Length: 244
Image (cartoon, rainbow, N blue to C red; front, side):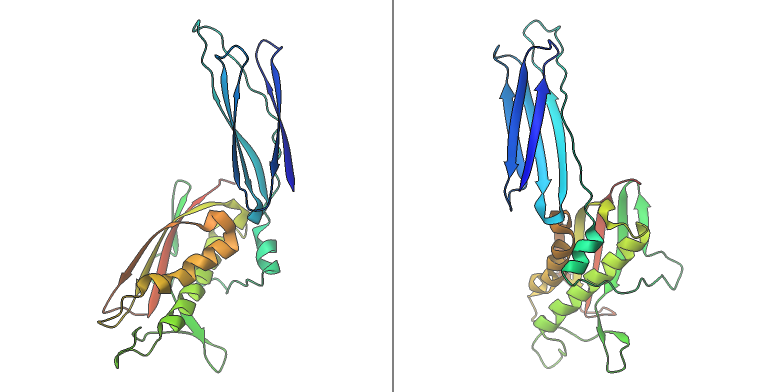
């Protein structure tokens, strides 16, 4: 159980509030609004605790309203942060990332734009009898044209997301604690003419990202189909990262 004691001190040095916030498992965000006895000064203390990834931090936003328009109040808080250790948590869950595979042509696997990392498409692969990773290139669906079921495609999407995480780890120098948020995921499925289960297939990737990163893995998403594609499933994503 995470317990926070937030001390709010007014500039006058007299008004002091001690807010005790208790975070139970599964409760990630608390918003505590503190109003001064004068009825004018308003404080908004936002406590964010993502238990699933063991991130404990206090973010404080101060909104000061003074009737005279002159008085300024200051806010002091006790801030405590614990590291995430994403790789350790992934290992405890049995999540193993495949080896990073570099680009083979005149492109890069990821491109930085400020703190956002754009990672290009990663295809779903499976392990053959010799232990080699092979790209699945068949159609997804139930028609005579299809060779991949929706369930198999979902596993391919999961494997593609692990490859994405491997590339992400490479660009973050092995420190997935620097992931602030997976912003957007785009999944493309090579479905037959009647296939409409694109979202269920891409759930394999979405679920794995949340399993590995917790709430930082939740994202906006686009799922679409393509009649011509070099793989049955391909995934790409945009990730906002913390600076070193």
